Amino acid sequence: MFNFIAIFAPAMVATAFFDHMRNNKLSIRQLFYVYTAFLIFINIASYALFLFVFHYRRLTFSDVFCLKFLGLGTALAIILPVIIGLVNIKLSIRVKDYDTKKTKNN
Figure 1 (cartoon, rainbow, N blue to C red):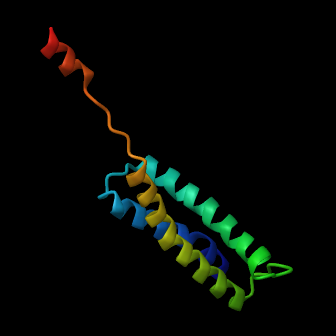
Figure 2 (cartoon, rainbow, N blue to C red; figure 1 turned 120 degrees about the vertical axis):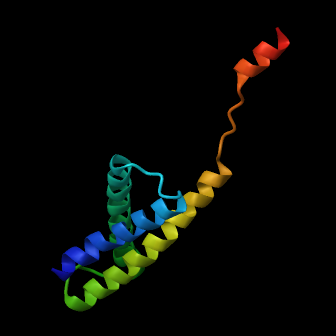
């Protein structure tokens, strides 16, 4: 049971935080897509960090490892929405309304 919490809970935290940063404007379908993307990315990143950075040879989900995995996943769940929000701010595209310019010039 604790294994499922360690795998699925950080993505829920990231999705809730991401939705809160967007002023709760996401639809149910968008929330599902965002949750799935966070679930995949957070778990792959956590596995990669444990294997390559912390040099674990095998990933066995004991109680102690689940706590470590949950802690790392929660840290990633807080950091990732902030990074995505900063990238969205920096890469926002301004769209000009060309129809109003045409009507004013004619």
